Length: 426
Image (cartoon, rainbow, N blue to C red; front, side):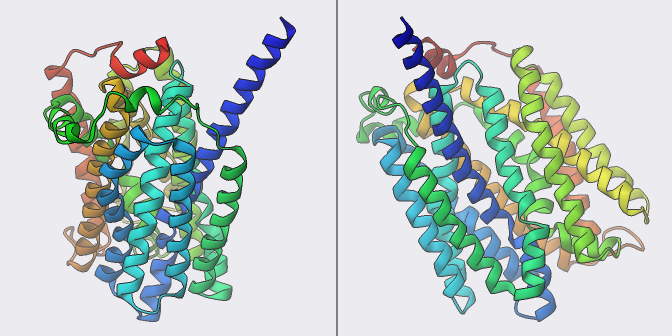
């Protein structure tokens, strides 16, 4: 009996190390996704690239995600997770070193593309595959922790990398990111051990010839589309402000220093880090109600409203506004549970890939739209052109709130559905 108890504890410990390993991979990829927020001011001030070119290189990561997501989701449903994920980490790290040695915009774009193709896709979809099998009963809480680690990756990129850029140059920051990837690879090689049967029980029900039929069924799911769009809209504060234009906006709009601006962006990520597991815990207790997302969406656009109406705020007030923007927009974690509950068990990888393709393509598009808005004259009187980006994010969050009202009218919330219920039963 004691042997059985010890074995159970051993399995749980092994599962937790697996969770921490894949989360560390996602943390690294989120940092890679975000650190152009620090590079952008230096690239602009040096005259190396303009707004549109910086947005294009940064968005290449997302386009790599989009291209890779469907084959990645299919692979993760058919092949052993451990070998596949370790292979993907190698590709992401090689691409990160390629970005370091690249001397022109075209090679840099290609390097960023492959960082997204190998890193962003596998870390996110692989994380969902592992979490849905290991923690079906507490999926919302653990996906909140998983996403929170990604926000921490974005946070840690701010001030430390800024100091590195200021003292040692842009190349040092790029090299440090690539070198850190080797540490991530080593940790996952030692501790990443998904359930051995995780892919076998799914792969039997999926054949190559059925892939397009599967995608057709997924694309006809209106509720899946609406929840995907909600995630995209609620993620715009971090995808536009947190990972690319935040420092540029704050330096231009409020005349903060680059250090002060990074502190405020860090507060945005801190709000996300705290909010993601907290909303996940509340959602698990109350069966993932819609009021959580409605509250978060409503409060998110209200935190941007004062910045659109008034010209000047002290540093502490702006910091508080961005902290609450991150905290309330983190309610998106509930939408991930809605999406997973709406999947068929045999399609978890493919469905997650389809959803992520929507997320990443929209995020890349919105990043480039924000770059175009920065180059336009101000849409508000007597304001800097950077206010255009905040106005853009504001209307996207308002649209998210309106979409939630429409969703509530169109669908009755289903409390127990396919994928998580199936995995919990197994």
